[in-house]
Length: 119
Image 1: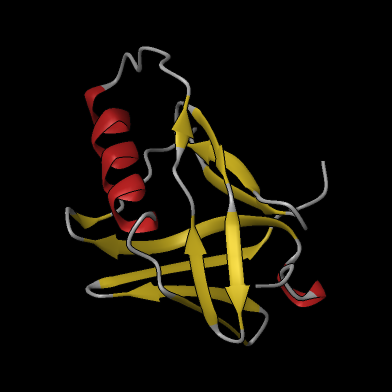
Image 2: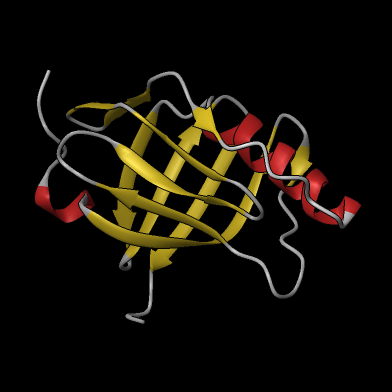
């Protein structure tokens, strides 16, 4: 077991996703973010913040139990997008970087992130 490689570390923003609950359709004005650090990951899932452990070995990637805040998401589309993302994210088994994009994949899962813009 080892820390994530440097190329994986940093801030990412979801641009496309699909998983067991279908497409991850992020409503306008919301975003899905992922920050990978040496000891774990954190991010937003449209409405709520989440975090957990990450284990990387070669191109294999596993996220530990996911902790999620429980803010009420007023827009039902936001709630649906968040559930779809979290269902996909917890099924991720491998990662790669292709054309500068972080690709997370697993059975029936594809999540594509780009480097997040600096604030």
